[in-house]
Amino acid sequence: MSLRITFMGTPEFSVPTLQALKQAGHEIAAVYTQPPRPGGRRGLDLVKSPVHQAAELLGIPVFTPINFKDPEEREKFRALNADVAVVVAYGLLLPEAILTGTRLGCYNGHASLLPRWRGAAPIQRAIMAGDKKTGMMVMQMEKGLDTGPVALTKEVEIGENMTAGELHDKLMLVGARAMVEAMEKLEGNDLPLTPQSDEGVLYAAKIDKGETRIDFSRSARDVHNHIRGLSPFPGAWFEAEINGRPERVKVLASEVAKGQGGAGTVLDDTLTVACGEGAVRLLKLQKAGGKPLAAAEFLRGTSVPAGTRFC
Image (cartoon, rainbow, N blue to C red; front, side):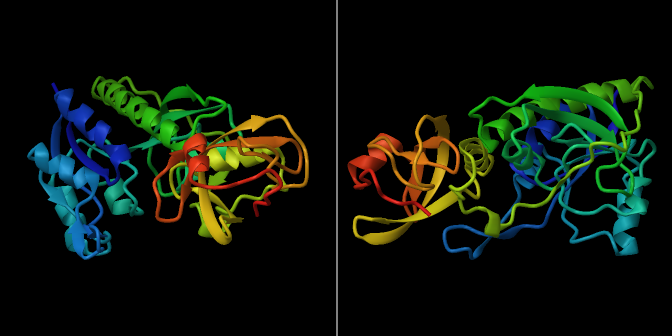
C-alpha cells in the first residue's frame, strides 16, 4: 500500500523530503514549485528551483503556477486525485480550495517547535533569539499561518556555535524522515492531531536587509547569535577602514570571547572585538566580492591592528 501524494516545495530544503517519500514507495502524482527565476552569472538565464530539478530527475510531472486564483489551476490540482498534499517551504499561500483539494488534506513540514516561530524564517530567528533547541513539525494545514494541529514533532538541539546554514542542513534531513513517518501513520489511520497552544506564539518575519548590520553595542552573546543566525546568507556585516579605505565585511562565524573595551574596538591580533558587554572573536570573514576566509588567512592579506574600530 502507498499514498498518492501531490508534493509542493521549492528550495533545497524541500528536496530530501520529496526524495524520501518517493523512496518510501509513495506515488508522487505531481510536484508544484515556484516558477523558474532569473539567475546564472549575469542573471539572464531562467533557473529552475531545486525541487523542480529533483522532480525532473525522478520523472515526476512539474507544475509552476504563479498562484491559485485561476479556477482552472484549482481544478487541475483537484483532478490529480491525490490522497494527500505534502508541503515543505513552497512559498505560496494556499487557498481553501487547495487545502481541501485532496482526500486527506494538506500536511506541512515546518522548521520550528510551533507555536514558536510561525512564518518565513524560523531557522534564522531561533538562532538569533538564542534558542537552545528547535525541531521539525508535521502539521495539518489550515487557512491561518502555521496554525494547524500538530501531527508529529522531532526536536533538534542547537549548538552554541551552530550557524543557520548548519541547522538548515540538519533539519532538512530530520524533516524528510519525519514526513515519511507521518505519511506511514496517516496511511494506517494512526496519525493523531494535537491543537497548538495559544501561548508562546512568536512570528519569524522574513529577514530584512536593514537588520543585517552588526551592532557591537549589544552584548557579546547577542552579537554572536546575530552573526550565526545570518550565516551564510544573507550574512551579518560591519564596516571599517582597512588598508586605508572603507570596507564592508561579512562575518560568517564567531565565538564569545573574553575582553572588554569600547564597542566595536579590535582588542588584539586575533580579531577579538569588544561589544557592549564582553567580546566576540571573529572566525570567518568575507570582503565584498571576495571568498570566505578563516580569520588567520584574512589577516595575512589585511592589516587590522588592535584599536581598529568596526561599526
